[in-house]
Picture 1 (cartoon, rainbow, N blue to C red):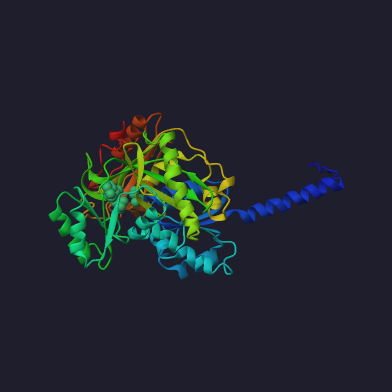
Picture 2 (cartoon, helix red, strand yellow):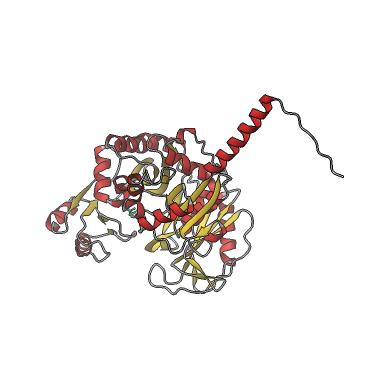
Length: 456
Ligand code: AMP
Ligand code: GLY
């Protein structure tokens, strides 16, 4: 026979119990229902950290990929371009936190769209700058002029219209080789030319002006070549406060020894040995703080990530480019190196409460090796079945160009999957990545064998 225990409660206790249940209800209603836009390795890594937060009730990934369903629910029919469809989805699924992985929705104004519809979506928090802020990435001419206005170190430059070839050539003659030419707008990483001779630079100007990479009609930025080692610094900001995420370095070219054409990224490592305290202090004082001040002075509200592509020129940081989002494949490594709650980081960015958030770093080094399809970044075939090992606990397999087909995972892009791992040392992290990279099997698998070697 079971006994019923009567627990006497005085008035004060009853009040406390009631308060407790109100708080619990409130907490439940404050739990995050997240919509993450994107489908790459970066979004898989973000999804992993969002999904493992106790603050998150549900995560939707739109469109997602063949592996992202481990972390949440894919929404394959939802495109980052269709803001009305995104709004309908947010309304019907109670989404209260919207995050864009890639830059396009931001450059196209998704944050402005929801700012204008604030009355329809009073609960919605948005991570990512408005279209004006996203111009830091969306227009090289804008970002170079911005840096010049605020004295932020960057390569000297001039901007030309497509019909100003003779002026451009005269400017090129004042520079030393190699010559750097860039289309003004987004060109999926293809709008940058670095060539050794004046003749090639002049031809490159014509190519950019003719729009062979979809850059027709865009202005052309010509700039001084900076000699040094690159690194990527991600700054989370709510417009006033900021936090610097663990530094990373990515490897852009397809071949070992940094040979061959540029790709969307072949691997990354974190930390970066030369990004020490003194270097970070220079980045803070010379780049991050003037950048945030500049945004404020120009009344550009910026709640999101600022990605600084930096060149270390003899111990001094120069900005090669800004991006208005996290980087790929750096994020696959950086997410391993953040030990505090990433969902709460996103919430604090959107809410303007980043000063209350404590960012903690995992001291262990981490690395990522991207497995790609044979032929990439040129043409390649898709649809090959992928066999995945059971990764050890310190390794993540972040899907990028994959999809599910008849219950199997198949290749569906050039950059297929990132093997990302911790290690007690950078060497150990890389060794673990390469061991697992061998165990992932698909037809035409290719990867770089020298990720991180230049830093060891
Ligand atoms: P961007 O799209 O501006 O980041 O340029 C792509 C890549 O080209 C960079 O990551 C650098 O490796 C290289 N690059 C761009 N601008 C310069 C520059 N001024 N000096 C040296 N390398 C550059
Ligand atoms: N890893 C460089 C980028 O994401 O643009």
